[in-house]
Length: 249
Image (cartoon, rainbow, N blue to C red; front, side, top):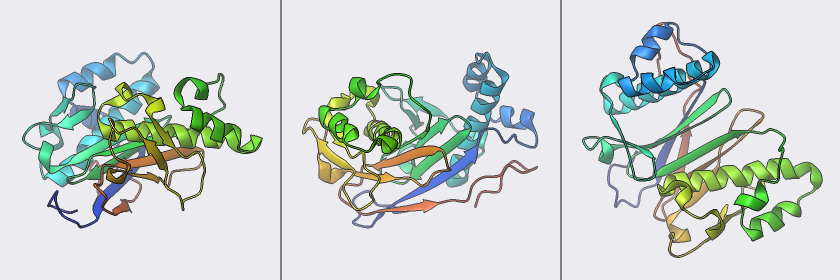
């Protein structure tokens, strides 16, 4: 990863993914990696399956970040910005940027040095209501309606994950009005996926928006505040938790 935030070198982003339904060899050890606050949040889940997915997600996040930072996973401390985006504490914040997304039984984590990142994955499921007209811009809704009927569900999730990834990377979450920027709904890789951005939100040239390679039945996107630099995405192998918790590098 580049170590100089002013460098013209490519922005390197590592992508990790793992199953939230694959238990650790020692579930109690996984829970022990969490902070007191995280364990309290885990206890508030009503369903055992949801509780276990949360524990596996947070334990995986801590293990991976600890590998980069060279510290014990239990030593990691998280803070949250004004819009709820998690960050490393002040001692480590400038050393690493990350963002975690999970849907159903899948988790994906983006990690980079000196570039804000946002990641989103979603399980592709039939829609029970017209969500697009509530959250997408007029241009995006028109582009979605122009797709063949059999492509519209996938197009919706491409649009949703791209918009979500951008607002997560931006850092202000859903306080960024979703109609103030446009993304492509198409599957093509040879076009700019972030198509319009109001000036008070930022400049198009500062951002990169990319498709993610995800497991079947999901859609995913990655946003990077790349300052015009090329983005190099490195997919780490899918994690398989072992008896000694993980072997990740």
